[in-house]
Image (cartoon, rainbow, N blue to C red):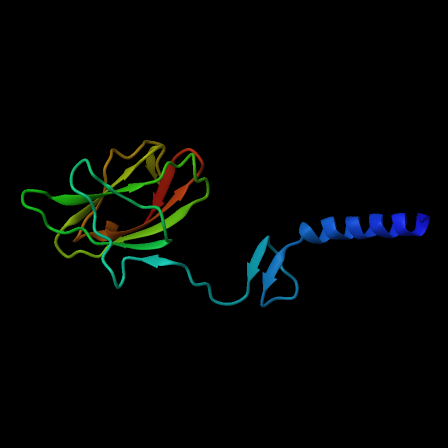
Length: 153
C-alpha cells in the first residue's frame, strides 16, 4: 500500500510538471511558451466575402478573426463606414490586423472600451481612427494591453 501511495504521488508530481511545460511545433526544444518552427496561418475575415461597415452610429462589431479586410461601401453623403473594436479591458492581448481594402471610402474605427493610442504617443488618438482609402494608414495592427488599444502601421 505504501508503494502505491509513493507511485501515485510521483505520477501526480510528474503530471503537474508536464502540464506546465512549453509547447513546440516542429521543434524538439521549445524556447517559449509556444515555439513554432514553421509557418503560421491565422483566421482571415472579409475575403472573399465582404466585411461591410455600419452607418453612422451603427458600427459593425469586430469580434472574430485576426486579419480583417474592411470593406466600407459608399453611402450618399457619408465619408466613411464605421467598425468597432471590442472592449480592450475584456480582451487583453487581443490582436487584429485591419486593412481598408476600399479604393474610395474611409474605414472609421471606434472601440467599445478603452482609448486608442499610436505606438509612439502617450496622447490618445481622437475617435474615430480613420483608415483612409488612399494613404499610408490603410493597414494597422491594433493590440489590447488590457486597458487600451495601441496601433502600429
